[in-house]
Each structure stands twice: as structure tokens, then as C-alpha cells.
Length: 386
Ligand code: FES
Image 1 (cartoon, rainbow, N blue to C red):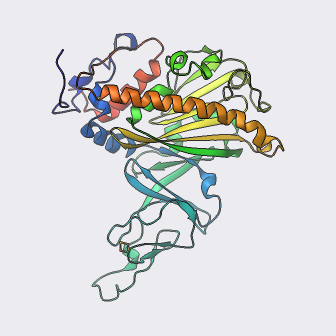
Image 2 (image 1 turned 135 degrees about the vertical axis):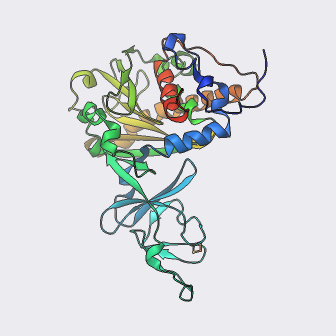
Image 3 (image 1 turned 60 degrees about the vertical axis):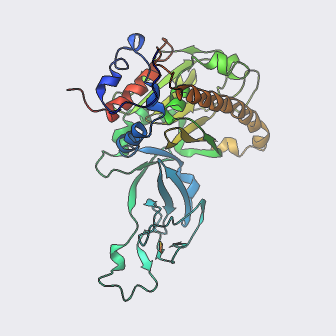
């Protein structure tokens, strides 16, 4: 075999991906260099994360006027601010003077004051103060407000979009809100949010989350003991999502043998008999089971680096039970054991794919959503065939 020491000269050429484009059981996996090379990653940032609705967690993080949180999404510093007028806005977290990052972390503010030379913006992003700028020719504060990104919500979750031209969030989600309506996500309460720093490409993590093939091996001591019947994959017809549905007994948010909270009384049909694992493209996984929901949110940070944010929501009435803190520890135990198992295997896959001797592989019948994610990426990143 011949090692590949460098990525191909034109990594976006369709010729590299003809085998990924075949039907699942005839297809090959993505070329290893698509998980490691800056050129391919830069195209993903521009053509995927720069043009889609990116999931960024619960709106309740900024429930009160003046509250804010910051994030770096695919290298873009963003501040989400709850204005005094009650509106949530997402701003470029970059000063209009000489570009300093404005806000850090999360908290509560009356105004946005730059830590460099004290230009000050109100919570609508308008520049209100710029010291020593009176003598500067043709300088109008009205021309130097913060850039605002699009921000919309569904089910209590925020979605961020950097592109003013793409259709709205409802078009992006399609039929998904209707499919998940019985879970009443809007009125759930986020009880925990955790961030993990992981040395792998974002696709590796999402691919892993959307196949159960690895479960008997990677999760042999944890969720492998859960018995399940996996149905054919789900694909959004109008929305940008796919998913798995598994029929089973007992909450999927608990390890086998543990008992938890009562089930949601609003569930009927398939949602009362199993669990949905939904991928909202490109990188958010929602798991909806009998008594709660949890999510995994992938924030790409480079070709071989990402942040994972895991969160969990329960119905408000459940969180008000006197035994909530005691019982919820069983759920935390399940997530705190299984998520690190996925983190470790994702980093191991990255280390293997980094080798110049890494080669393309083949898919099993258990990996349709890996194959469909890879093709979804190629549809957006790779130049169309001629
Ligand atoms: Fe912000 Fe100078 S860079 S005030």
C-alpha cells in the first residue's frame, strides 16, 4: 500500500468521493484526510456552519433582561444577549474599533463595554460611547454598531445563523417539531449542562452518535445492557434531520436495573413505546425518551478539535419534586459513564485516521446514518459533478 503523506491538491473535487456516493452497502467511508486537513475543514465551516441554523442550547440561559452568554462557534466569537426590550439577540463578539473580543463567559450586564478602549454598546448593539473620538473625521457612532446574527428558537432551544439569505428556522426543521410535539420541549427545564474538550474532527463524533454498531463494544459495561429493537432510519422529508427510533421498555436515560421518574403523560403512539435519537444536521443529537430528553451539541473548533456540550431536560413538575436531586443522580451516572466512553473512542479514531497509512473502509448495515451524514456533508462542501 502507498502512504498518503499530504492531502490531495484539490480536496473538494468530486472525484475523491465517488465511492462514498454509492448506496450504503456498496459505499466506502470518507477519505481519512477529510477528518484531518485544514482545507477540507475550512470548506465545511464556510459551506455548512456558515450557512445553516446552528443549535446553541437553551434560551433559558439568558432568561432575564441583561443576561448574556458567549460562545465560539466554528471560530466565530458570538455573544447572545437578552435585551432590555425582552428580545434575544446574537452579536458578533468583536469590537467595531480595533476588533477586541468584547464579552467573556456568561453573566449579567447593563451595557457591553470593550475591555480595550471602553467603546460601549447598548444591549441592542448600538454604539453609545466612544471616548476621544470627537476629533475623528466623519465618525458617526450610528455607523459602528455591533453586527447582529440571526437567532431563532424552537422548543426552548436557540439556533444561530450567520447567513442572512438562508430560509428561516421553521423551513430548516421541517416536520421535526410536529414529530416531537408530545415531548413539550418548550416547557422542559434544563437541569445540567456540561462541556467536554475532545481531540477529534466534528464528523467523527456525530457519526459515532448516530450508529448503534459500536454499542456492544464501546459501552459493554454501561448501556449495552439496555435491550432494544432498532427500526429503520428516519429521514426528514422537509427538514434537515435524520434519526433512529428504538422500541424498548424502561427509560433510555438510565442504566439497566435503575429506576427513575414517572413517564411523561403526554406521550402516545411510538413515543410511548420507545426512544427517538434525532440528528439535527450538522451536529446536534437529541435523545427523547419516556421521562426526559438529553442532547449532545457539537461545536467544531478545528479540523481535529471540537467541544461537546451535553445537556439534560426534565419536565418542570418533575424538577420540583422533593426527591429530584437524589433520583436525578442515577441519570447523571448513566451520562457520566457513557459519554466519556464515546469521547475516548472518538479520539482513538482520530488518532488512527491521522496516519498516512489510514485507508477508506466499508459500512455495515448498522451504519446508514453515518453514510447519510457523510453524503449530506458532500452535498454541501464538494463541487458538483460535471
Ligand atoms: Fe474595542 Fe478599542 S478595540 S474599544
